[in-house]
Length: 378
Image (tube, rainbow, N blue to C red; front, side, top):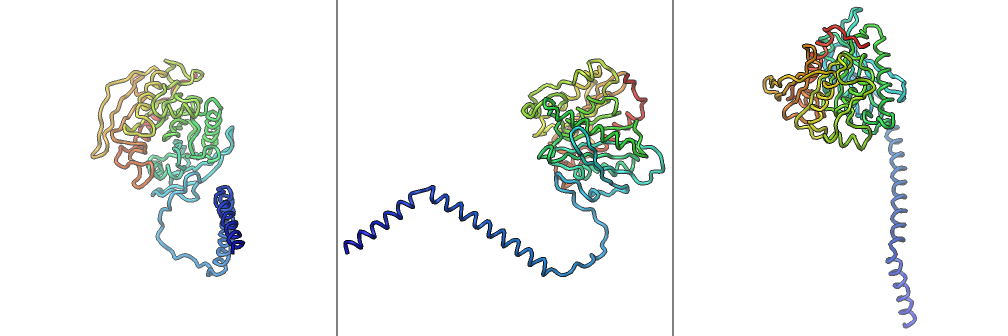
């Protein structure tokens, strides 16, 4: 009995020592998880093969009335038209430039009969695709009405994991490379039949607005009009760290001195700034800072602000900065608008249907610039 008791005590003590070793338990737990993962993977593959064998042959789908498809997930180019009622056609293409390859979507309005029409370039924001911006803005319907072509470039997720344009990467050169690639894309599209290369306007949302400002600085003679919607003031950031500070309104804009200088009338294209006063992503102060910096570079002076409200839409406070009797810069600060496309489609991310219609404001602003004689840029 004594011998058996001693043996039992020895066994129990050994078990206790093994329990007291956390590393042993951890290794065993990890091995168990790995074994379970392999078993689940094998079971999933086997189940998928079984379902594939058991699936009945596909039958032709019943004919149904045409319905607009859902937009593509962020970071992918949709293989179908955006979910808006438009009469024209969408096509896809790609441009290879200094920043690599970038895809784009091109919209041609219906009923073109050989005439050359203007081109509006639209740059999407972060976590957004070209198809999603088209769906939110419904700009293709306006393109049908105005007989305009639309070009919507799309950021590659390998270039930025959240689909943002690298508007702030000036120190590394990534911003300039992307701007150069997008400018090459515009030239590629503007050379196509039916496009008027002399009437090109540029608009951007959020990160797209920052890239639009950079492109207009680098090639001011390329564009007749530029629109920044909820974007950071140009030149306020040169790196990722300074971009965060700029988004919070803690950095001052600085236009590239190599491209424009104060009082250089006619060098920069006219600018429209749309900014929500309750923007929690890009501080509202960026809108006024962008307008002031652009106006200073052009030599334009501010006029008296006015308040505009249509129906029950959010009110907007408009300030025109005038040069030679015309509005060279227009600032629209919108009450209660957050970080969203003003007046956009309902039930869409980054869209506020109750705001003034940003799409119509952009089109009207660009049309006024197209109607004027092109300024001399020497």
